[in-house]
Length: 563
Image 1 (cartoon, rainbow, N blue to C red):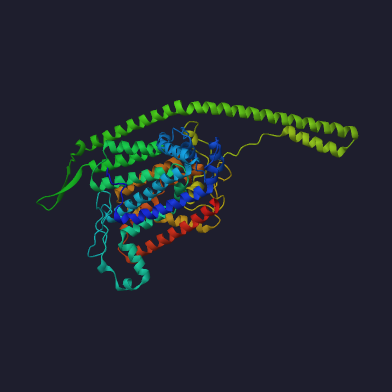
Image 2: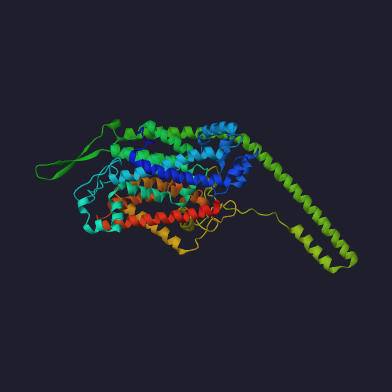
């Protein structure tokens, strides 16, 4: 694995600076919104965080863990996340001792800013590497502007070639054409545009703002894809150590994302270690094909098999850690919490029974008094109220969850009743990209309905336009092995959410796990479109306008709700 993944090249510095400024703005919004409350939460800090924090269903668990370390995350879904937060807890402990206030928001903000900026940078590098066909630091200038070949490197990407001679005289004289020309001839500009498009999506912005784990997962998943692309280009498979490091970190943050490590590592190694075909010319000018075995790691089967077995062992180990974590850290606290909850429930039921008995007694006295005095009006009112008290039913809490497939630690999060089509249109590809103005930043566990419609058809048109660009990008990049690996990772998320219905009631908050596939596929629009200045320039300008629109639309809603 490249030891300089976190170092900056010269041309990346302005890109990283832009990402830092964006991340700082997002964290400044959340800090200003809750600073007065969270810097002095008192001894019941969890109740303060839980009852006051409300941003689209994101949880403030990280604030609680960094304030007073406990294994508060769901250990089966996030087995190592609490341990990853331990250094932040120690740092916050020291700062709190020095300042006398809880610095949790500032400690979390510092690391979330870095995670957001590096997620931006990793995606920028992926796009740039695809556009240039090399390591992203340079691109070739040839005598004509064209896409060379259909095969290219092992990831299926081609060398992006441009030619100053191909620029026509009207292009040099027109301001508009100069802008489109810049988008055409500078892969750095195209990569920055697509990266900015990704971070204009509503729930990518919120993931970078909320103190939840999603931006950490996004950063690590993009790093995994970046390393996978480098491996394909350099024809070097993942080693066992690299695979285990990625799996422990990514699955430790969110267990389900460990499947994506399997997908990337095994497919990359399978493609690299597969036997190559070499053409051999014969005397009769016909060609034959002969397989040449790759000696690396003693063949494909053994090389992939060893990594697969190592990942299986790591999966079993991680599951064992989660079970032990639950038994020794979570279960004792759950028993205390359940006992307290049962006592509170009993106390409330007894108080409600006393109130009901007192109300019945009061209305019965009024009925007796009305009968004694012959007051028919009072008698009717008191009788009606008494009947209401006796027939009153306890208030039923609104259930935002659909019916699960089965009960269990994981299956209880599934959903077989919520409409897949409405969820896909309004939440998966809707709210995840364009925030809704109604119930803006609302939580389905509080007051937001599961399905919220846009007020205007314009939002649906933009959503459809983005999906059409994505599909066009998939078609243009259909020969890219790397794109199909990334699509396989996104397909797992679709199976999880739309198939099993996992987290379907608030599927938009998990956008950071997969939504980067949309602009990633659009990269191939720039790379593999017909060699036409007008077509490429038109695509660039459309994406630029779309990006500006999404930033304005989403930031206006965020500022309105958070300030």
